[in-house]
Image 1 (cartoon, rainbow, N blue to C red):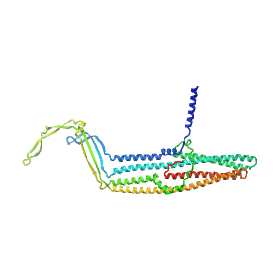
Image 2: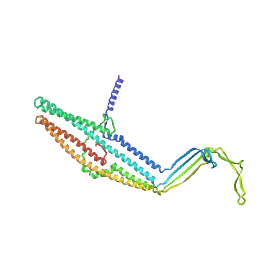
Image 3: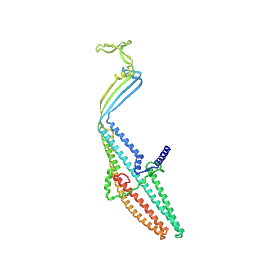
Image 4: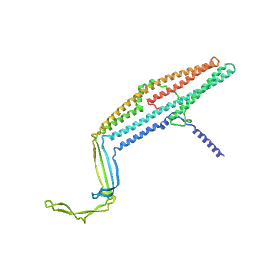
Length: 480
């Protein structure tokens, strides 16, 4: 019995644990940012550019190493060909095999290899800055979408008690109308108010769903129905004294931290190396080489000689003055089976070693035009850096002005809410004693609803503007 009871308890707790684990995950801001960066397609594409740049660096390193290659061929020759054993042209079919090894190394090439290596390193750095820039933009987009979800959820929390108050007033008004204390027209006004509040609640709840879908799309998620974020409370509004940070200070800090500036500067360094590479073509190239080769043939070899029985002698000249013929014996070569494959390769081997010097003199203006192109590209990268600096200066001034304006709007909206809440409280007291009619009461409540909506919007707008300033100042994105 005890064993059965223990088993039931274990199953019960396992079921409860499974139910807890199967509950939908609620994402924090940091989780959203990390996931968006990890799964963003643009980030992955640019990370592949880093891999390509790493390969370019390996290529540049490889240019310093000597080359070593094997070569060989085997063929059949038919017709009038030179007999490799006798040197005589003969109509024959032969098989020949050639093989060799060649090696080379660059001794001096106008420092092109060195400049290519340095350029590859700068290219890696530039691509890393570009990836970081994309990650920064993703982080900013995610926090903006995340704040929009928080804003929409808070709007729901504001709309729900508003609807509850209206329903309570509807019940109270209904009783007063039945008692004859209030006219039936007041009941209709309150009913209209309740319907309007119900509509407003549905709209705000739908806005939450739309904001969640927008955030999920940034995260490359498709399961919209189960996606939700943690109900993170912004404990205290980041009331930053903007007077403590001047635009010039933020701009100077951004020049050090912003990745678009780093990318532009790295591209200038790359353009400088391109000029050095182009100038390197003006210098001579000195390289060393070593070659080894050998061959094999299936033709018979010469193993000796014998007097030609049909023509034993041959005239090779005449004595000057007497005209007497000079005769010698006429020998024919005696051939035998060709040597073995490896024996021939050993006998026929040869090698060469030396230096090769190439001095550029006239190449159809190619060198000078490439240098001019590299210099033009360098000027373009400098102009791009200037443009990025101007864009950054304009953006920071705009963000700073927006933050100042958002703070003023927030402070004004806060005062308006306090005033409208007091006005609504006073109107409720007067409405309950019949001094204010239902129409006036609804108007005052609508002004309170609008003030609360404006306050929420101003609050989150200011938070985002402050986070944007912190972003350009180099502060990591968070809700702290």
